[in-house]
Amino acid sequence: MVIKASAALEIQQLIGALGGTDEVRREAAIARLAVIGARAVDGLRKAYAGAEDRDTKVAVLRALESTGDRRTIAIARQAIVDGGDVAVAGAAALRGLLDSPHGPTSTEALDVLVSTTLDRTAGRLVRLAAFDALQGIPEGVRARVAEALRNDPDERLKARAADASHEAATADDVWQDALEGRLPDSPAALRAAAATRSASAALSSLQKMIDACRAHEGTVTRAKRPEWQTLRGALHQALALRGSPVAVYDLRESVQDAKEHLPTSFLAALHVVGDQSCLEPLAAAYARADPADAWWRTQLAGAFRAIARRERITRRHLLLKRIEARWPDAARELTARA
Image (cartoon, rainbow, N blue to C red; front, side, top):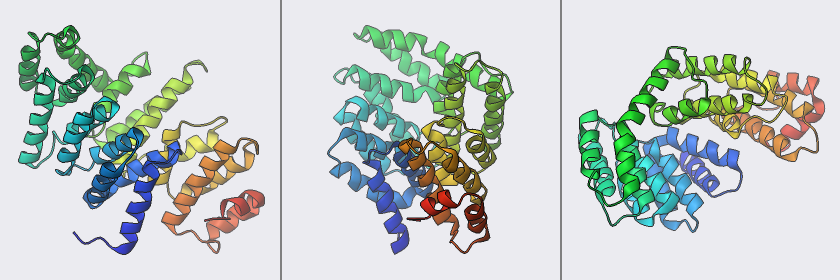
């Protein structure tokens, strides 16, 4: 596949952000690389091979998770050998291939996960991660793996296998109830269910769930609100990983109404799917932010500039002139390096 020079440069810059310390920029890069898909895989393979720290390897694997590209399998195999958090991320990357329309790809990913789960020489953390990645497969296949684990010498794995069917059924119920507008008492259960189901859920369903979560945030105590907001951010991130702007209005309104920092997932999603309508709320939030709050102002500015570049908003654009008229100091700072 021939990649244009401009696209190659973008991919190179995004991959560079995976090893950075800016969490929002890293999350945005992961989502953008997932949207780019197969064109970014060669660069991601090289980045994994050349990474000197495990955090970068995990970020590379997360970017590969949504590409659906068969070349991910070779990288995930190596990640499983590397162990620890990297192996967990490798198993998650394979999980994303189980629904591949390309039969040999889904079959090979399934084989790697099953063999890792049943490999008694592998570490417990790795085996548990591989087994958990199998929770989305047909019940009959999952039941056979669980049956094989009942005679395993590792008591933790045996217990996990015994509970797996019940946990999977509970997660299915939580997810289905949420799709129908019935949210659980705690957002943790829904967030766990979303982690394995949002990648294949209908975009309109995720949009409705975001709306329901936001409405629910207004009914809970202030102490509980951040948990629900974090869940809503995770759903926005799932949409960003699929390049979908269906809930951009909620991102825009969240920035507009924010009196405190938003979770990084909101800003990362804005980097990827935000549009022109988000620029004025971002400028307003930047203008009212405490000048001493460097982190928040930096993240707002980063999202503003990313959208302006993507939407090709120059200083001559009517929208930017309107922003300059309302918030001249903010506009000057936001466009200084745009």
